[in-house]
Image 1 (cartoon, rainbow, N blue to C red):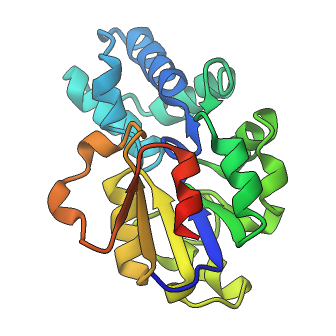
Image 2: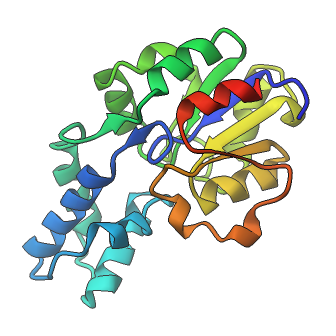
Length: 218
């Protein structure tokens, strides 16, 4: 791995453990719609492609048609509980403090930018990322795994893909890094890791079990 100048983080399952708030919100919508709630591990496998995909998968798993207003209702529910149980993974703040001395830090997530900024601010993580270095799924570029957002973050820092590391926990992040030609580090502690086919990992990929292990990569 060549010298890294840019480290780009996924949000859910990488910087923060948001699974309970996402699952509670999805299940609130399902029960309001007359469906049974789904187990949290099942919902964990649905996260990563954005809220619309999460809701579509949830209703499919519940065996019920999706109401036309389901996405809007989910976003309204989730907006009220963004930070009820969501917390940074242990060691995240300390790791970002040190990594920020060695490289530029960015966030690339499929979560809407408004919710992303509120979570980062509410958990004291926003100080690590300049506003222009935080990109959500409702921005000017297609959602991951399309590599356009990652390439844009590298371009505004004038760094190459060979100097860029994407840190994520899911198959979506893996495919994004591959498509862009960036280095990949997979967070095994994240709730998206269980749905990542091992065949998608390459020998040069790094796997970490806690955020502070990132320090050994730079």
